[in-house]
Every structure is written in structure tokens, then in C-alpha cells.
Length: 120
Image (cartoon, rainbow, N blue to C red; front, side, top):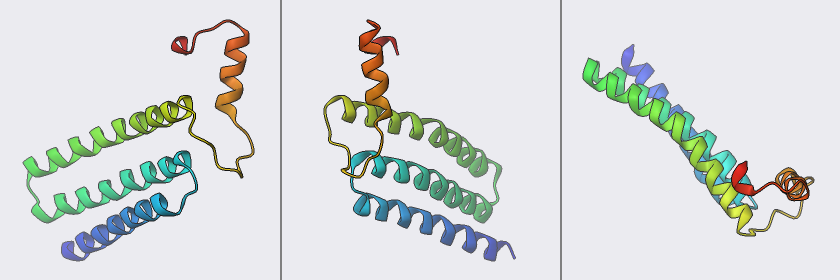
């Protein structure tokens, strides 16, 4: 029974990783690529590490897997945000179908108020 659960977790994790890879190929701009990629990678890696933990059934392996899951869950969104902000500030073009540029509006309002971008 545990082997079936491990198999299901591995297949689900691999599916999420596949979705992340397809997102890199299919999305039209860097900002959408990061969004779908970060979410899919976190979920996919979590499922794969849970399968790994169930397969080995050891405290040491489980604690390392949980620590890795926590580390990835904390760092991937922050890194994704920083990459997106850096790309935006370097002038990477938004997709033509983008409806609203909220970051551009916020930066423009900050400039009008005399705030520095480093203050945000």
C-alpha cells in the first residue's frame, strides 16, 4: 500500500515538474514564466520529497526532506520576486496582452512623491 502511495506522489510530482517545464516554453514573457514555474516547482518538489521520505521510512531522511521542503518553500518565492523585479527595472518588455502594469504605476507614484526605489 505504501508503494502505491509513493508511486502516486512521484507521478504527481513529476507531472507538476512537467507543467513547470511547459510553462517555461509556452508562456509569452519572463514574468508569466516565473509565476507558473515557481508554483509548479514548489509543489512538484514537495511531492517528490514526500515520496522519497515514505520510501525510505527513516527519521534522518524524513527530517532532511522536511527541511529541504521548508527551505525551498521559503526561498523560491523570494528569489522569483527578486528576479522579476530586476527584470522589470532593467526594462524587460511585458507581454503585449498585459492589461495593467501595477509595478510601473507604483514606481511612478513613488517618483512623484520623491521616494527612492530602495525605500520600498
